[in-house]
Length: 339
Image 1 (cartoon, rainbow, N blue to C red):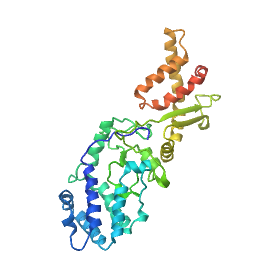
Image 2: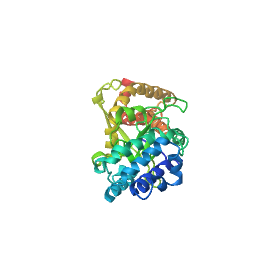
Image 3: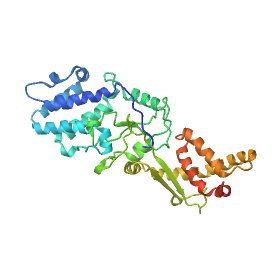
Image 4: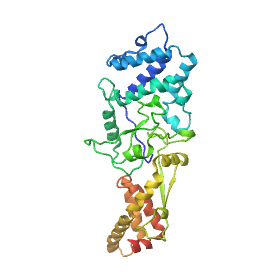
């Protein structure tokens, strides 16, 4: 992730706690001596009694849990707890428990219901908070004008009918127990979410991935982008192989980020598309500075623009323009030629 979300408090997180209660304390403790409803706490029971389809399905799954072994029930409970430790999973501190290690009831019965919770139940007034309200408050708190994953695509306004969707960072297809865990749900642009990542698993085969939220007390997230240019070529008409994108930071997590979202390729394409306009801008600014100071150099102009861009680095793709200008400092004579 190019940038991380600052988390917010919201009632929507209560639903995950309700599901933990349902899975771990109701279904995984199912027995013939107690009914499903008798084991529900008051908060979830209010939702349970609001929808006949939900009540019937919750009861049906409870009945199917009764004959499961104590070991199977414990394994399901462990999987629910483990697969909702999103930060620890991303950091590789714990290993996920996959569906194929669990009884079939998880994939065949629980998974469709939890996905339905996300896609249907969260839109209802009877649940604590809605996706839309949480989304708006998260975006407002973070004030992101561009997708924090790629930094390239602008977010639609609050009035738009085409606002960007939540991404299940750990896909619900593989991690159904985290289907409504909003520590696992982040707004990403369409190109990152549906165009690139889709249902790819960031932590497959033990990979480490960026946890998409800022964690209090942890070091500030930072990725340094480096651009290398073959300056023997026309800087205004660079081909893909003439420009190389590199990163300084957590190498393993950056590798995952790149593989999921094709970051290097997209940054290469974008940098080349803006290079000619940027060179012209640099030259114009330099000419203005030069009028007031005949000793002013292109290095001075580049240093000024680099410092200026740092103030709003994630607007107008300045996070790519800045390393492009840093690279130009090694051959400022070319700006005059190609500007």
